[in-house]
Each structure stands twice: as structure tokens, then as C-alpha cells.
Length: 107
Image (cartoon, rainbow, N blue to C red):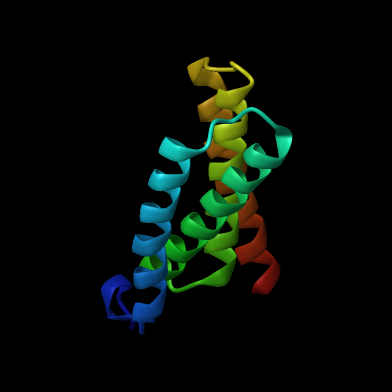
């Protein structure tokens, strides 16, 4: 029986996520979000960071993709001033249901 922390992990994902966090912090402090292009770059960098962190933590591409999409949607909702806690609860419920559906589909 394999345990959660005994999965083989790629250290490159951790390095990419730490470097990506530094890039994201400098991008946020240097570039104003005036244009849609800068916002798209922000969400792309955020997606790459979330994917790398999720791949290092969970070592599963499916879970990493679900967490990445959920994180980007959450930040898009915050950007659109949809800050009610129910949106977060519904987003988490959708991500969990997609995870269950994908795991049952494999079996």
C-alpha cells in the first residue's frame, strides 16, 4: 500500500514553483494590470505556478489540473468582485465532484 508522502516526486516542480512565485511577485509589483494582455499573462503565470506546486505535492496530473483550474477560476471570481463565500464553497464542491467522477471513470 502506497502512502501519500511515499510517492515519487520530481524536485524540478518544486524549483519551478518557487521561481514562479518570485516571478509572479515581481510581475505584480512592476506591471500595472491596465490591459487585458497583462491580466492574461498574470493568470498564465499563476496557472503554471499552481500546476507545478500541485504536481510536486500530489504527483498526479489529473489532480494538478483540477486544482489549477479551480485556483484560476477562484482568482477570476475575485477579480470580478464575486467575493461571497458561497462561490468558494460551490467551486470546491465542483472540483471535488470532478475528481470523484474522474476516479470512478478510471475504475
